[in-house]
Length: 403
Length: 140
Image 1 (cartoon, each protein chain N blue to C red):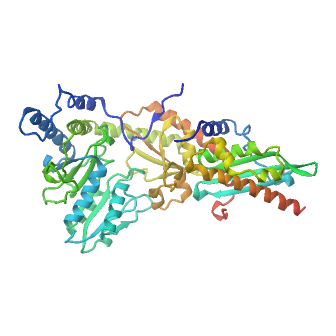
Image 2: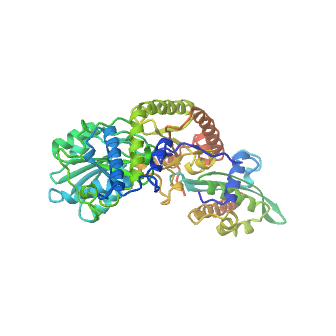
Image 3: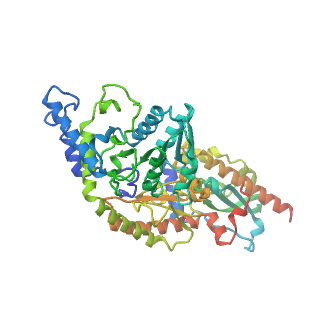
């Protein structure tokens, strides 16, 4: 019997917490709160609406904002679309220039590409070799017609954290809207929207032990940010996002965010200890590189390159654990990770990268097992790697003319 | 991953017992190195490098591949394709080996469409190794 792989891909998605499932189950059947929260004429609707508003408070409490600033969406991708397109369209008379970075999630990059095709101009900022956007580069690229800056909080591939505090101050000072994709950070690191100068923030439930298919967008009230809606219909969510509210999904997200509020500190501590355990177990290997930043990065996302070994073959060798890779072979496009390339990593190190991500249900024994498995698998693959052979022979691979 | 069981088996067997799967090399100074042809194809930046070596002996006036070794950096199907190629080479004359097409490897391993380039790489590797062997014989 083959064993079920150990899960180290929490940055991709998380299992739903059992406590969240229980809450969701109470909103589906004839005996439960199945009503349409938009129905104003009977108790089924009123009760569903009450649950939706309770969930909105739970989300707002984690982020320290006004519940009226939370708009339900189908997930962080929709939130990113709504924030960026919604603000770009609404404020287009002020200007049609947007600033973002080269290592954003595709939900941001593809949205920006779309806007470019509609006549907007987008500046894609370079990051430093750790993956951080500098305040200076933003300042240097701000123009009179810049309407929006969109940057992620925690990068999904390499775990680096942008300083959204500093960047927010700059944007507010210059009168530019600041959108932050917090899909990877909400419930994992502290976010206080009463202090941060952030205007729009995207959230997802399934990255933090809630269900897939539900997310939210924070839209600041003071100073008020306005958005042109992308969906039109029944006027839900104050007309910003039409569509029947999925009570069970919303209740699930509310419960997940409520749990995160009480468990974030503990989760962070154990996750940090697992990252340290993994790194201490692997760091003496030859030709191993950290993509991102050990000191300041979010420890739940840990990206390593094992030189002279290709990532997809490493994933095959690591079949007893579930991880992801920046290798071209694992992507449909056959291109290595654009994030790692943007950091200036050579392509071969991007091909060799593995992302380990930890979460609430990771166990110490699982990490210990992984250390040995990774060491053995990398050395087995190096044994059959001609590049490793050349490296051992002292050949400079950069000087070879490859066919 | 949409790999056939054949790719997975070949890959895992290679990892578990590299020597038995013909992983290895002949290097300058080895006895018989003059009877070895080497082909290296691919590039690290593309995520695939295949190194194939064939050792030939003259049988009835024909060069026959009596042994072959490889090392491959690349995805699982690149490693499996290399191993498959090796199985197909041993005992063949150079003329026969020259005719091996990538499609044979695709068929045997049931490679998915997106991995066909791995088999192409294997075909290129044998052509390079044969060329190398011939050019070295000419210099004898």
